[in-house]
Length: 128
Image 1 (cartoon, rainbow, N blue to C red):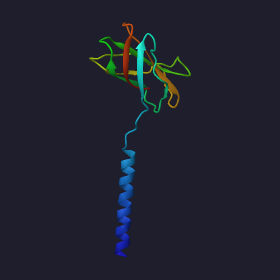
Image 2 (spheres, one colour; image 1 turned 90 degrees about the horizontal axis):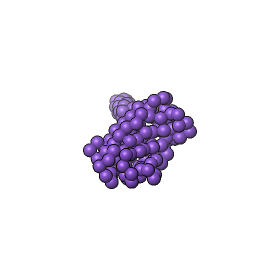
Image 3 (cartoon, rainbow, N blue to C red; image 1 turned 60 degrees about the horizontal axis):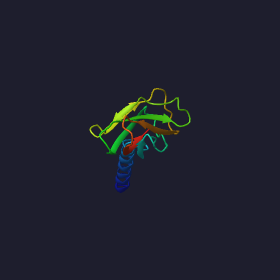
Image 4 (cartoon, one colour; image 1 turned 90 degrees about the vertical axis):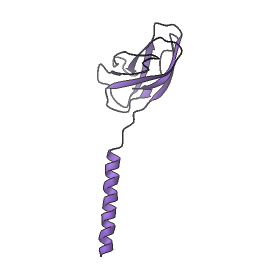
């Protein structure tokens, strides 16, 4: 009888720990790698937004010059849904911006960019 109670306690402790660990796991948003050249190919690949957060994130990992890349996130099916424009550069490679209207999850978004430098190439990561 005593062994059965101990087994029940161990199982209950294990289930409790599993539940607490599962609820504390971080949610990871979908991210796509981009390689843009301004003005020739200024858009990222499209990717579905996986969460309700009303911000997009962009990080440059390679810059062909010391210019600034201005980035904006757009919903593919309704380009009236877009974010504020945010700049990245070699000296400030990461930024995030808020959407100006409700950005639905589980639909596709893409990043569009521009720069004052012709031929500027930037590689990095974009999360809608």
